[in-house]
Figure 1 (cartoon, rainbow, N blue to C red):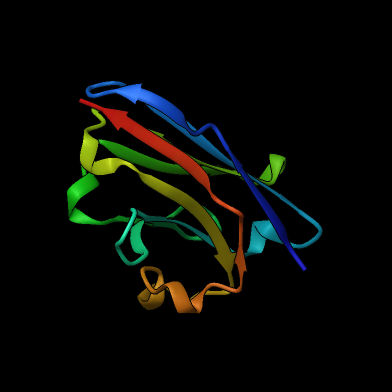
Figure 2: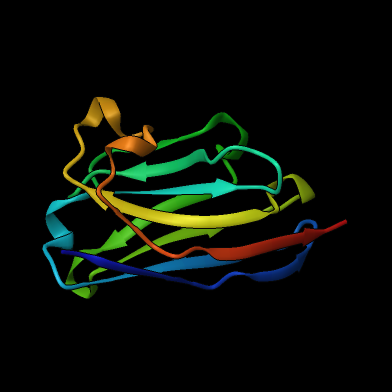
Length: 125
């Protein structure tokens, strides 16, 4: 059983940056794919970015390509999402997720077994 705890959210002005962290405990995080999803008020949860267990492959939703970077440090059992050039459309609760996910399924929320509680990101204009 893996527990995930996100941190690093907050309020930032448009054009600013934030770095989210996802600290894992209680399991073999290093063997799992990891992803970030987000949910804005009144909207469905959407995929943001994912990374394979060894960091060899990363994928992003089109709206964040070139602005966000997903990474992980398996020695620290921690994943990250560096978010640059933020805009109000990025405002949401951000969730990290982990699990034994096939590469073809990296963007599918239902494939992830473990989820964090979420961290709020608010971008003001």
